[in-house]
Image (tube, rainbow, N blue to C red; front, side):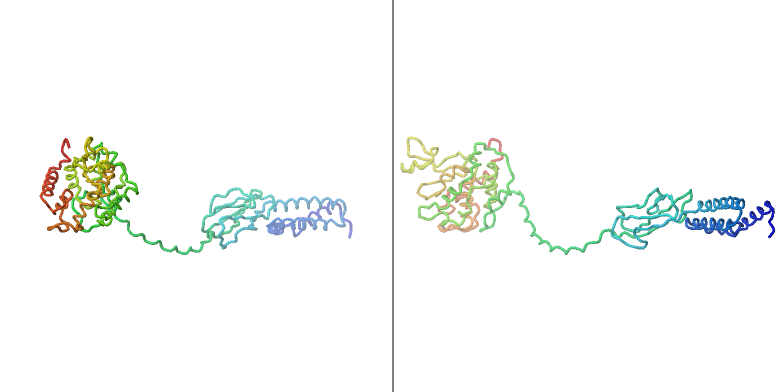
Length: 435
């Protein structure tokens, strides 16, 4: 082949380079752009471009090789520019799978991009995207469906189709229900609290006396009108003193417990703290079932509610004289005052009257009244086997009279005594000025 002039040969080389199928025509450029859809495709295009340029330059003169190299470098720049404009693609590589369920309330995701030097932004459950790095974690997730999205950005281009995972948190496993506890036994209804209503009637014949505590619960506290009774009001008999009374023998050799079934209820222990004289009247009325106003009126007749009152003077044997408390002995004589206390409990050393009541009859207002209640109910309840004609159970006023004079039954002295008590009751003397 004849040698062509140099200018003609350069023109032929330029024309040949411009017609290279990989990048010399618009169709070839389009093919190159399509191939550069990823970083790998761009790298392949660059390698192919360089290979073709090198192949075309083999066996050529230095001038032709230099011109072809300049042309190939320009084309290489064009291919690299096409790759630089690639939109990154984001991939989630680890984390809860779409459609999965878990009891965990925390999640961690790892992700990457097909474009180097990409940055990332993340969104959870539709929140605004915020810059993030891989791995990304969330904790304290509520039970329910959750969606995580991540998108890469490179060279100003952001993945328009973020990678996403949607999963469901079911919360902590529901524990098996514990066996139902055995039903608690239904407690019996608490007994109704006693009301502090006054005792205005007698309880039926044969009624069991209330306990000391039950009677005390029914007391309406009243201020003291006899302050001189305070010490005796507070006195609580000892167990030895009460046993001494219970087992004391009458003139016939019987113990008090044998004489009356009511003796065992006599304690002299009201359970009241610092009681007034009227408090102890109420306690006696509730315990023994005797109207409290009757007791108030009867005690007004006996002592004017004065526990220091003494009466019933009698001449006794000198030996007996010394058995009485000093306050009851009349100096220079062998005379004594046999009745003492608010209810004037009478005591004779031989056990014929008031066996076992000394000294509690004057030491304790509660014992004095407790003993009175037992004796009065002894008659009312029908226990008197020696009472004379006309005696039957349930005689209210006759039982009051028997406290003063029981033999013969309902005698004149007893009736006069009752009349005086009735008068004080009608007058309610304890409420009057000067009482």
